[in-house]
Image 1 (cartoon, rainbow, N blue to C red):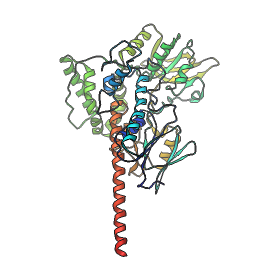
Image 2: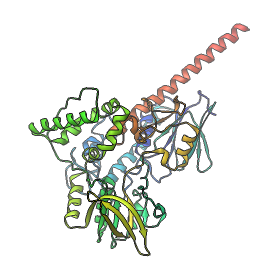
Image 3: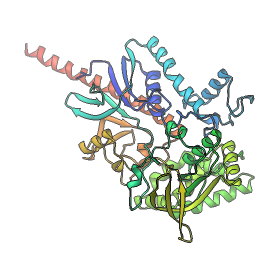
Image 4: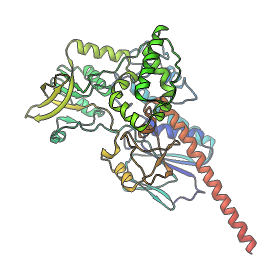
Length: 490
């Protein structure tokens, strides 16, 4: 095992945006020898699910001026775009500006470009800095008296000082139905973020997209770009579509007073929107102005009130909070107008697979009438899994079974301390296992967008570096004390 006197060794499990940004920030700030083991089975680093899309029509849902990778350099992404001189495939001749929406694939290229440059700078600045990308999968993590060990699918074992879980968003859970046999069918696509699955869709056959959020929009505009000629059916429990970004006047909000309830927060929010409208602004400015306070407000809610919010308000909050680029909204509106995208409000009851198609039965709202759709393929676009107890993955199952992590009571993620350390089943805070991103949703609620993730990555990197230096200092003081006692005994 690694003694504390050896170079600090950190395993980062997950090489998407979160994992790549933790590695980047570690390299930016280290002043001591450092070894990073970045474990990512994909063929690229930094892109993850969101930015590895093969379709240029998949645009960021945040303007370019708000999505720099570095909190301390807000114009970093804009400057990178200007150097590229190819701002957007949707507006190639347009001058780069802060309010434009560029493709997610282009943003993935940006994130991927960061690691090589910061690694070279770190190696010039500090001797003994190394970044190893292991194109492998972590299946287990164990804690020993000498330190943690990460076990990989290839059979390799890594002895490290600290471990970061940067798992990102997990694939959707299968919708609840009485007979789940259909979910083993070739006609069912469980993981909607697979470019290969999207490329294989028959463009002349109708299909069903379950869910009407951002993932559904991605599929609809990608199919439209590919020349889809049939009908896209969409079933959603409430039939809500994400709202559109629009320019609006800034509005400064006053955070509500505590204690909070879901009802009082909604009352306050409606009042703020009225005030904003009176000043020539609209609800978008209020939602954006609320962002710096969202996590604090969420943490002020009792467990009962958080559950009430999730049950009654969550769908409406998400379609207003997570808006889409105007270009995307325009395409979706066109598809609805010509009847190629048909939105149904209801709940799926059953699937009956035939030789050439599948019949999907659902109860429509508000009539509760049973309807049947005949489609060739069913795609799960319901959004990422949050409940880790229900997600079957070797690493997560191992961590839960050994008690190194604990699911949060809302089923939104894992129990995490304020410093990003995971809480063990015993209730103790780990001193070597950390996380960021969606795993913290139960504690923070807003923790999946770039502005939150980049700050978490920067803060966590600083903490990992400082905690190791402190442990080395303590070990030195203990060793020095023992040496002094031994000299006196002589």
